Image (cartoon, rainbow, N blue to C red; front, side):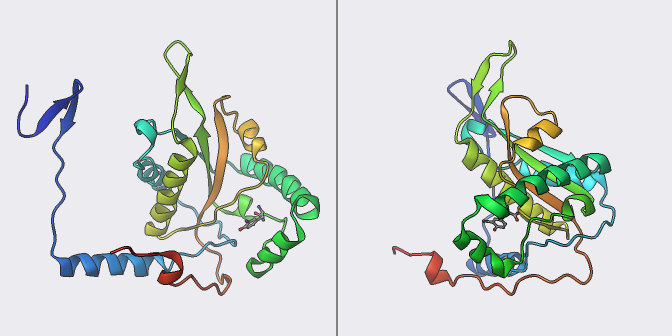
Length: 230
Ligand code: IYR
């Protein structure tokens, strides 16, 4: 059965998609205001412990999970932690890894590059922030009979979903930080994740502490990040 609102491709239903065409003036205005708003986003390392409702976190994760993914497999699990004991355990184990990284694993030039950001091995935000969202990538999935099911472009897909999560967090009026303790294996152990999941990124979510200071960073100019072929 074919009708104007859907068609069948390879035996699968495709529904009609409509996106409103606006004027070029509106296009320019919308794209510019979105850019200006995104340009206000800053990674914040000092969090307030102010409560954030669980429903907000659910909506943020639902937004991230709208991301495009290889063969629409959505190869991710977002673990949201507000439990104080679990946050304390995550902080303790992250700081053990970070201490090792700062003291022996990271090169001199790497640490020099980080000087401007003011990072160190101490990660109090892992306990202070009301929520930690840990993104896990699913290397593969399990089918109905526990057989392995392929996922595709897993790293890219989860990276895109995390980018959208960061934007959703900003849109909600909250702040975050892309934290990647390395190695991150301890997160799968603490959160008891199945064998197909690997920790990808940890995002503390909440309000900034007041006052909060962030590095006086400058972003690259358009001509440093883009080349046009017209
Ligand atoms: N993971 C460490 C080090 C670190 C690395 C990079 I690259 C940064 O942009 C920031 C920090 C830490 O979280 O301190």
